[in-house]
Length: 307
Image (cartoon, rainbow, N blue to C red):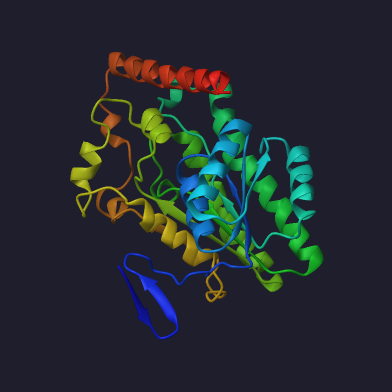
């Protein structure tokens, strides 16, 4: 349902005018799947030229085609392992050949539940190398180019409410996301003089297949947290993507250094996530490990069998 108001055509359910992000060039890490893909889609629909990056070329190409078919516009893919700082520098050099970015969305992440005493160093690094190190590498690569060229820019990082509460059984992620929260505040102060803004979103549960399989393995994964949420529901994806678009758009240049929770007030009412695993038995933890391993193997099979 559309109606006219002044010079603008507004569509019921859409908060923003058409073309809000025209002229913006935004890179979304982890943009081929999950929350990153949803954010990229919404920014594209508002007129931004989009780059999506990730390690799996097939996934990126399929997602880019899907987004262009849905919204038109420009979506380019960047195959990139964020854990490799030299590869990050080379990738940003290639992107800059088209012209400078105006925005960066740090979304790439990984996570799984585990008792911390069961973690291996490889398991810890699997999360920290991407979330902590990789997010800094690409933020640094983009930010220093803006500074050198005297350009303004906006950086949005997707963190979690665990940066405020901590969370059991996801310690590598909690530690890494807390570091990104600190980076957001620190660089908002240091880089504000250059017109570079940094903000973060701390989402509650916006269900995606990968996150659900690795964080809530079970046949009814979200019932407890749905029932204990003050709003008695989970997040709806447009609520998250609208907030991302607002933070990336022109017109709020004085908003920087903030981490905004969007979780229906769950963390205020209930505190940390995953506390309901405190009483799990060894058998339940083994079942969870088996489910997570099966999901990982299925993902690998899909990657190797797709043409």
